[in-house]
Length: 324
Image 1 (cartoon, helix red, strand yellow):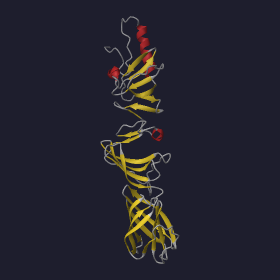
Image 2 (cartoon, one colour):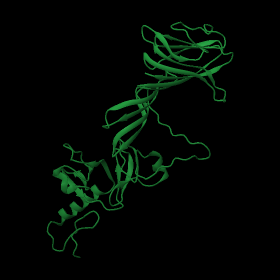
Image 3 (cartoon, one colour):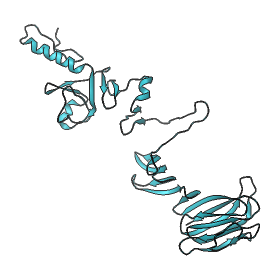
Image 4 (cartoon, one colour):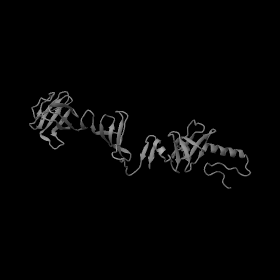
């Protein structure tokens, strides 16, 4: 026999005529004790702990600190005041203490075993990509498909509370350019960024505003019963508003249309720019549902919004578009 150690655990062989064979034998026993049934506290360590625990195992990362550059990918076990080193082979198994799961070495990466039980409880999953504690699911693919299992399919993004975020980020080379979802407020928003860090809000749907809003635009549709009035918050305290009576059933009332300049600040004002005779500018009145003539639509400006009034004998949908 020309070999001096085993191929898997590097256990030293006893040699003919060898002195102090007990030392060699004890070293082999120590490596067996350290190398079998490994449990690792760090699966990608860049440096060794300053105060290691007896029996503690560490797997060195692929690019550790310079002092460990020769040990990249190796397994170190602290025994009897020193580190014993192993080079992992495909099929080696360790227990990942952080993930509380079993890992198998495939010759390049430490992977979770492919079993249904592990898939249900594994802490993170990488599909053709690396996953970790901060990004528990990672997928590298040209396309992804989420389909139904019988009829419908719904993708849910859940946040803990209103100040938190549940959103989709769109990136170029991992630099964020657009974000849509619930981004810290109480309504849906669309934001864009030119540098990946600072975002500008382009569209929002605040809970206090029954429509969509942007820094210079807002659109809302209001349903008013006959002889009723409703206060509509404005997206800004001044601007232009166009209104018309619309209908999804195909019977719009374009004869009830108008364009106004409004001030909904501390000194409300409403100026008519263009309107039909079926729309009444009621200036700054608090409308009640009977201020305008029968068959007409009434509008007025008040602090913080506009009042709309419907007197067309039946419920109507009124569309308002703001430029501000």
